[in-house]
Length: 501
Image 1 (cartoon, helix red, strand yellow):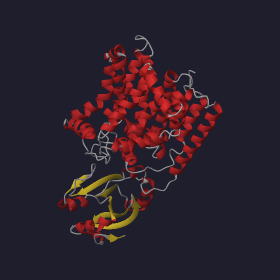
Image 2: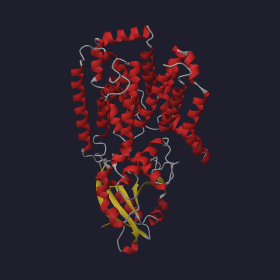
Image 3: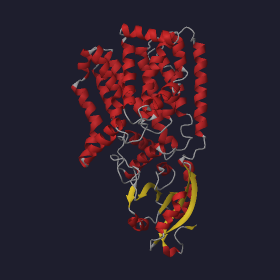
Image 4: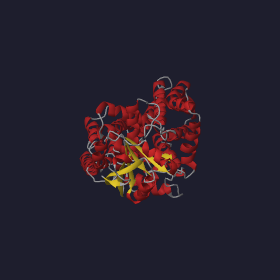
């Protein structure tokens, strides 16, 4: 089978695009990625991503922000446009898996993309605005090109080698060094089993293409401000791998707590079917050892692809659930191999299982699309819109708390975060208590949002300002808190500080 069957393409498109624009932007992660893309589009600065339109936001390279900005420019300001890159990446990854299936599961090359697309974790990742769905696509493209190069003679494979290095460059430009973890597995595989190919893989023209794609943006950004190199290497690389500075499940058991449930639950029911196809856990282990003894190249490549990145994820001190999302590609290929030759899994039974899984996943996706959440930026925007329109606010400033940056998709206002005498929030503007009055004076076209339990202290501090007062203009619930909304203005309005509008 040289081309994917029509039903597989239809299934991928249905799963990827169903309800993709129904759910609002959920804070905090979706809001940050969306705001960074919108700020690029609105400012015209496609080099430096920002969350508030001023301070550079350099935690990730810009490919995801570029994709969101381009999609919004094409389709408009809505959730559908913000999630389009993830949906396209889901479809593209499924098609690449079919190509990989032709090499490592040739009897039924459509089975690996079927297993992958009808697993919970890949579908959930494509419905969340983040770097992960695009990263999975670029990593899978790189591995597909590698397998095609590896399967050909040296002269015929050069174009695939070039495509592989370009894809690795795009993976690096999507998430930085973690995007190259499957490359580390590939190098380890060749170093142990095919050193001749390993030397050929580091083709100078391919390395040059990788360097241009992967490092050009970093070079320009660091050239503008050399101190950023220390930020990239220190805070973003060393800090994530060796320290708990990011406070993301850094305990020694964090990997077991975060990753194992995702890998097990995220690929159900295919784990159970694959074990049954292999004859049970003991027989599956025996077959695995037999494959290792005879040095089955397809099996070995998939194991290196899966286990080397997984080991790094366990050792690194920064751990989040979606970090292992790219590992579901080699996992799907591994699970599909025993399923392809299982006599019990007839075409009719497989169609029934696939239909039930597709219906269940679509039902779950639809349920979440209409789920009421106090992290939904669209609902927050509905609570804020009357005050924004009445005051013609140009900015929404969250005081002493993380900003809900996803509001920018719904309200024609910049979103910012402000701290007073604090240094606890990563993306905030910081002022001292002595600077509060001057800061409020310049925010007459802004709304200030603060948690209800901190509102009294904030309004009391603002009450000491001679020229500027606060007017309470509303309140709404979000993220398990009651939030109060104030507008700053001259006291000549005749309102005392903290008065209710």
